[in-house]
Length: 375
Image (tube, rainbow, N blue to C red; front, top):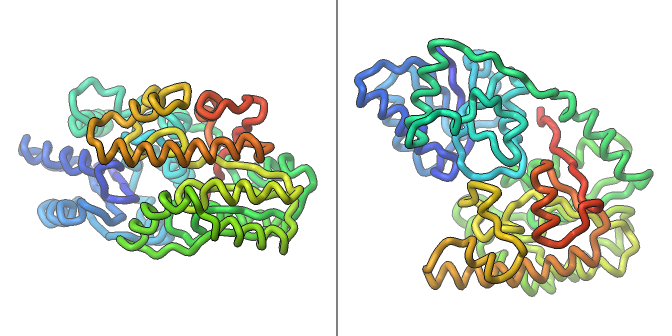
């Protein structure tokens, strides 16, 4: 019997509905499940997976749990399900799965492409729906395990990360990381806190500047209002200016400015001689609604108002109005990025031409700086 693991948000954008439908497909065909499924996470499909866990003894639902708890069940699994159709800037979940000795099943595109073997690419299965593709892929894995080539994980080790950072730092030791939010509410925020710890172990002085955001529904509201506030966020600009004046960093690395900080803090940083860098984690810098972005070709060039609204794929006036506001914010941010930033960093190679074509930044100024394996 196959061992399958899923950890993450139980949402449609992550493809969890396709996992539900795949299980229902087995029920419709009156087949026993040929796998044991361990699910960790919370979201819109909690009730459905709980119901299926009651009906099938091989489905186990644990809710949201820390990585340490999830790792206890890794020995029972060969594959991690990653059916998200969203284009990811980096495949950190897939990389984590490989580190744990499992193979990811998902869509080999964007940031996940290096980590998903072609034989485990859901799109390689010639059926109509994602649920049917998953069903037939699993049926094939039950019959025969494919030969899989594993990417070199040492390229994403912490030691390799330290070496790459030291090369880019050019001897500079005082670093200020600027992020919309600094508490561990998501992948970006967890990443910068882990990076801070690793850099400090290597002798760097690291400070993180950002707002604290609450969790749950309140946090979602703050994010939405934050994008509006980011257009004229004078308060954060003044606070960051004082922080820079106090710390006198050698490097200011902007990790996230779209969801709250905005363009004014970027502009304020011009008064300091520190080298400024920008990391593009979020595909929302180039697309109206990144959670709906499925293919690189959905991003329209050049970065004009007409192309941006066209990529929203809607005639809804409210959505068009929201997209218009976001475009104006991005144009303001873009102007500051071109003036202030010396090095533009992307987590995956496929993003280099996106940054180049969208923001008219020289490819020579764009460096691939991949994430590291988080323990």
